[in-house]
Length: 115
Image 1 (cartoon, helix red, strand yellow):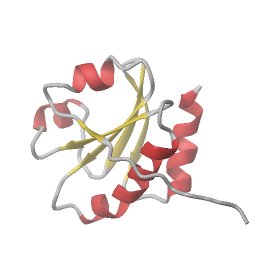
Image 2 (cartoon, rainbow, N blue to C red; image 1 turned 135 degrees about the vertical axis):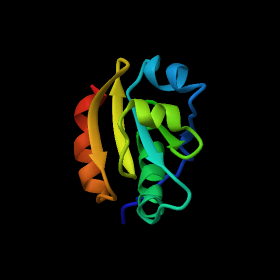
Image 3 (cartoon, rainbow, N blue to C red; image 1 turned 180 degrees about the horizontal axis):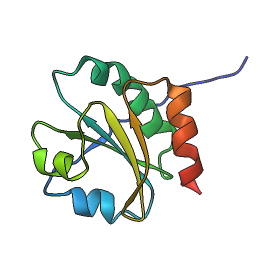
């Protein structure tokens, strides 16, 4: 019998003030989940984002940004629909996923950027 456990970790909260340091200056790729409290699809994808935070710990920094509380960064990256997830590597956007998508889709988009 295999022992498959999903380790949930809370994504790191980022904001307009610490985005540069936490995301753009990160030495590992960063997944940013742009979300809002009132967003139903954001709530649907949140457990998947937590799973990724646990599964890729040390290889991928997983963060969340509340777009209502941090409009400057959301506007800078053209966030028009949430959830929007972006992968940053070396301070640049290398992937963008819009909407509540299945975990397999997120894994397929994130994995190539972990090397």
